[in-house]
Image (cartoon, rainbow, N blue to C red; front, top):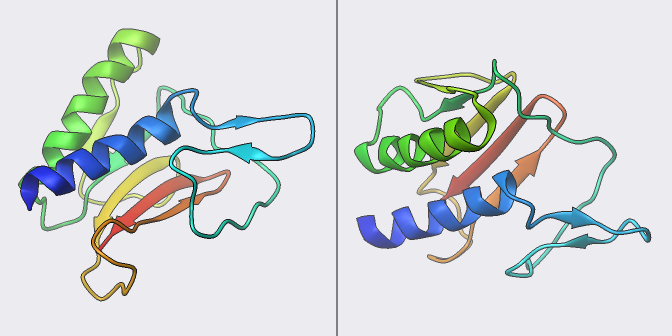
Length: 122
């Protein structure tokens, strides 16, 4: 379970933080794997030196490991040493678990705004 969660979380974070999400000239988002549903809005999230990871006040060990992994990758590629915090809703990448979600074991919700990026897994 923890391994599947970590792999799923890594995959989603890679999508968000890498160049896997590319907007073409026709304003179509190319996301792999293809989401079951997508609502595209204007704007984008910009990673900067003040961005942090928010993993929740319970500090789940598996989410902290995923955040630490990406923290090191981002530091290497950008020079930004992003903090891992308990909370944050502005300029944050939020990793969350919500067991009340009814989207299946492989499902997730990804919300990207100009202020934050939030990934939620059941």
